[in-house]
Image 1 (cartoon, one colour):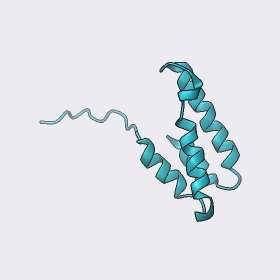
Image 2: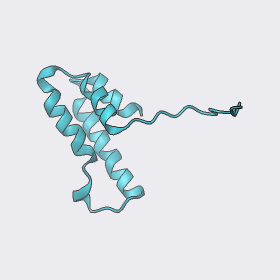
Image 3: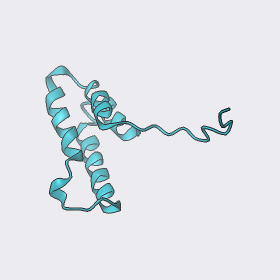
Image 4: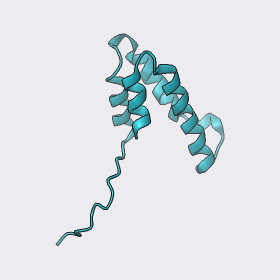
Length: 85
């Protein structure tokens, strides 16, 4: 039968498409295309020239923070959604 210890913790993992849909759903229709563009720019890391690893993770986290800071006044739910997971 199943492992009675599972799950010891609950982790949420979002694919970026679902995360984008969740964030964009919290902004007005007028701004959705721009917010979607900004969302994908967070994860477009080719120009950073960093190999996979902690430095790349840190760079993306800074971008997430920048997005949230930019959008928190107009769309706090969208910013919080991005920061939540």
